[in-house]
Length: 377
Image 1 (cartoon, rainbow, N blue to C red):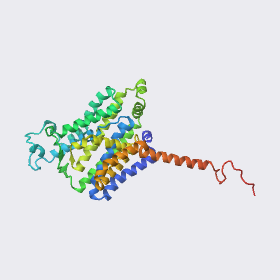
Image 2: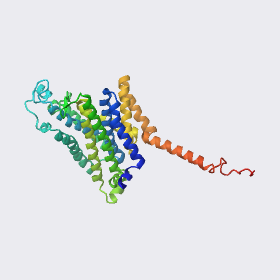
Image 3: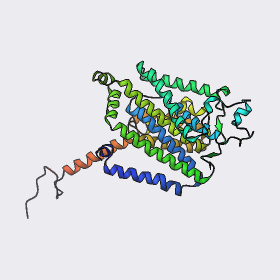
Image 4: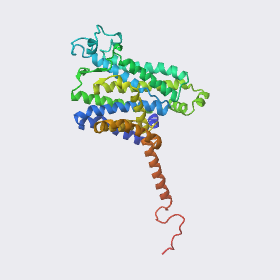
């Protein structure tokens, strides 16, 4: 109980529980059928935003490559969905349709085992996590940080994008993996299946939030924040910053892969465009808009930006990139702490004004402090 109080106050726990019930239970019951996959997609973006906030807001590592981990998690789930419909494609082959079209005669070795959902679920998280662990080990041990680390992560993402675009890689090339039919035997286009996927995404979102909150309010989280603010002083005090940064980096990559794995069944496609560097930059913008090192603000920023994107790309398709660039500039110049930070500052100013007014009047009278009262009658 003491640990729970460290994570949140009782009032905050009640608000969080109410939000969980509304989002997980009420929304899928009242939302129109066509809106459920879109809202489920927003929940997945919320998980990715939490992962980005964990590594950028609390560890100070601006990653421009988290789109790669998101896409790798999606590819892992997409491989399972392709294997689960063996013999039901256009060519009625045990191989995926794109392999038959490209004249492949046997399944590549790295596709084996993905006919099992537990195996695919584990690999969807383990493969991106292993890649993040190896990359982070070399990057952090080499003391690469700041803008240089951001550039390296972006280069890694761009290289992976070019690799997955090739047909010889065995992941569908430019078209990627699509035309999924079922998951765990349930048709993906069935409204009940879509609601179950939505609820699973909501559970993943709140579970990810609680995990991130547990980490950042722990002793580990305090050390990570100290490494972010003063890495040399932390190392001087005996904390090996490489280990802490590597742990947060790998955990964040796996959470982002979880978001990608839940995203693919709801949108019905995964291709290399999901791992392009611009997607990773958008994730950073989500966190910047909502507020770094706030967790809840990161989710709010992801929902607001993607909600605006969904509306603006339908109303004015050519204006979205300009709006996104303008949003980033405005937030950088005028809202360095994001929307949550702005709300906190406004709330603090209002509280100060209210307290000053209360102090200027004695209790029970309307006579200002320092002003002589009239003679008694």
